[in-house]
Amino acid sequence: MVTLLFTAVAILLLFGIGAYFWQKPAESNSAERLPPPTNARGLFADEYSTALDDAEHQALLAQQREELITQAGDGTRDALVEAHLTGDLDLYDRVLHEFVQFSDSDPKLLSLLSYLSQNQLPVNRELAGAVLASWKAAPDRGSTTRALHLAALTDEPDIYRGAVESALLMWRAGKLGDISAIELRALFEGEFWVLSSRSRSSGAGFVLKRTLDGARRELETTPGANQ
Image 1: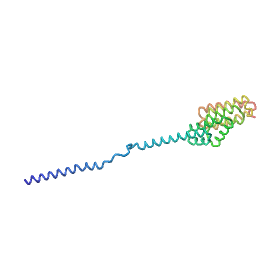
Image 2: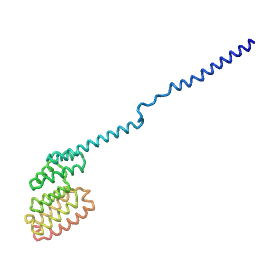
Image 3: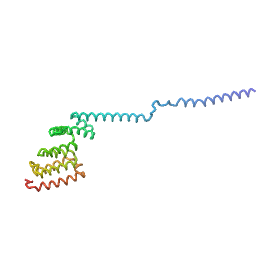
Image 4: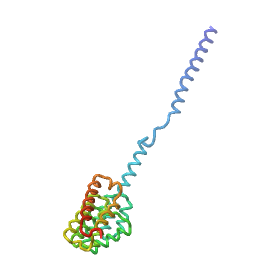
């Protein structure tokens, strides 16, 4: 009887020890479990922040563009410098457009050209077109030199070629009587080198070279051209 009693107590003890060790790992695993993250975006938080920064940056750029265009409309020439410093070619063209529209007389146009030259600012097609139109209305030595130089500064071979062809037409018509054939030829060839090497070697540059070759031959055969 005593043996059965000891046996029962031993079984109960073993059962209790087994239950204790079975529950302990479960409690440990529960204690080691990490709490849920407080930020629901998790790994996408950086991307979300970057998107916000980009949106704010674009909004600031748009505001800057509108402010510079407004300043140009008010005649503030510093807007040209600031627009150029942004590196945004479209913005610079829009700002310069405002000043070209304002420059509706030769004195205003010359003043704008002087400002661009002093600040080493680029010219564009629209400005070149305005200068060439002014030149054709009253061609002389000074305006011819200025028009050809500005056409070359655009770094557009087709614009410079058009200016060369216009000068030849006016010279043939006797409208450039104060410029000799040798002077006009030197002017054509000298301004050609204002264009960048990229433009000179382009397809349009090749057409320009052919035009200049033809102009040189024509001017060289003019009586007294080499005197």
